[in-house]
Image (cartoon, rainbow, N blue to C red; front, side, top):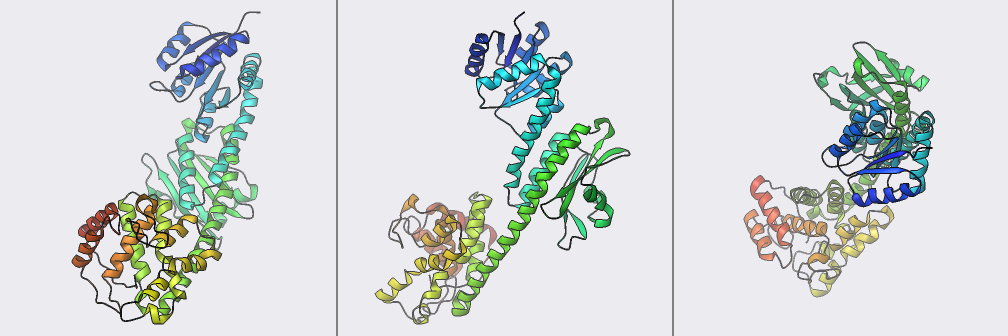
Length: 472
């Protein structure tokens, strides 16, 4: 029997050398290319029984090569470290016969080659089953996203990348469940957003939920409506339109149904997470109200500190997760003052040494109050360390320089500025200019200079001032 000829296309020579050595030992003739154009030339001039193809390569990528191979009837095994839903489905649509995600064993590679060479029809069926499994596994990533808008962005981008629709939209059920409201869309070409209905009544789309199947309507375009169902109820639906020339196949509809199963559960989880988060925020607000009721000088202070902190964080390029941490910590940082006697907290004159030591205990008291809320560790750390000083002379831990969390440094500047421009029992409010001068004086001593410089730039750019107060 003639030896089978294998072409390996991968831009990493050490990978192709490994595959070559192994496959030669398995009895194959093996040819290697590390660049797309070279591979296309080889395919034009040589006969091969199977191609092993990497997707991500410089220059001519794997999908371009795959489009050149599909009409030759050669089985193609995709080998890639980028096992995304988009890549998997696109590879299937482009004519690949199998799909291996790195890292994989050499035994897996050998089995893939044998089944694809010996029986291409059986290999295609195996590949379809594997694709379904791959999509289910990858959809678990979608389910892990707990921010609803981020989840919807991810879902609609996946659908758009795979099917290149003229329009794609997601409708989510309202609280009463009677209407489905437009929550996310991507208009393409000449389709304008206003051409999309803002909402649908349940009676208009109820049939897709009763049958739990994708609805396909063929008019000028191929219109596809995909039900999104959670564990207990209808969550919403996706709607896409593609030109009839790109008509969606039965196989693609099956993939959409599988995809939608996980998306529905993911959206349901994100909505539940939003409800829990709202309860958590309400608990925070309740605690803040308790402190404000105890000390009229703290009124609006937490709002002001959160406002300034977020301005600084955004200007410094802090990510969305850390901005959320910073906002919550800004509201919570002084809750420990609930445990301090009014005679100290509201004292009109200066504090003596013993009283100052009691004030310094409020970060510990804050953490004690917050323990039952099961806060993020980052939020706890910001609340606990916002009175540290970059020279190491702060409290409660005497941290210095980079030992202090950046978010705590940001909160420290926002907190101090808010206190300085506020009227206090023991002193008058400073002007904005006086407070800025004090921040500059204390940079590299009490405050981080980069944070101070960023905040002063913001103040000069915005000229916004919100009144508030707190014993700092």
